View 1 (cartoon, helix red, strand yellow):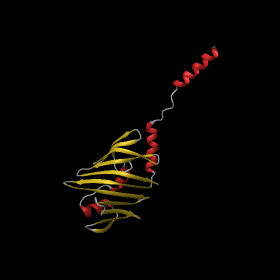
View 2: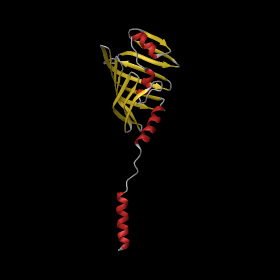
View 3: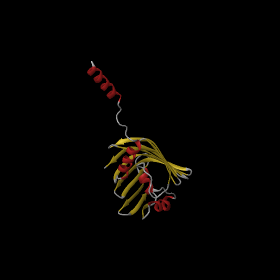
Length: 193
């Protein structure tokens, strides 16, 4: 009888034991390190941009390979409107209106060619839900395994949807708001390598 009671008590105590809970901050830190270490990735999706009183929308294809990138914006029927790419340290921009131009800075090239600019270097990090290292962080809101909001300088980045790709949570809907610029990117496919 005594052995049966001890066995029953052991079963009850074992049933009440909880599995160890992982620290959400520690898991996010691991994920953040893995996202920061990604050198090769691509996204396909849709975008909408508004600068002052003008706006447009279309398709986006962004490929990053090491330090190089190739960002292409297409209109709704698939005609390329703008291509911005960096190869071997040289930035080029090709548009339907201005042909191909070259510079050392994507931001300067955009400003000179289209009259406004986005922080392209920061976009590379923001697309992955990471803060840009060359700007101060005013707000960084994490919800579990992913970022919900990031504020750096004059830019507010909101993330309202995430997807699990290759065991990493990556942004699926990104809204970037600056003084006169609003950019929304809906990522339809992520490719990580």
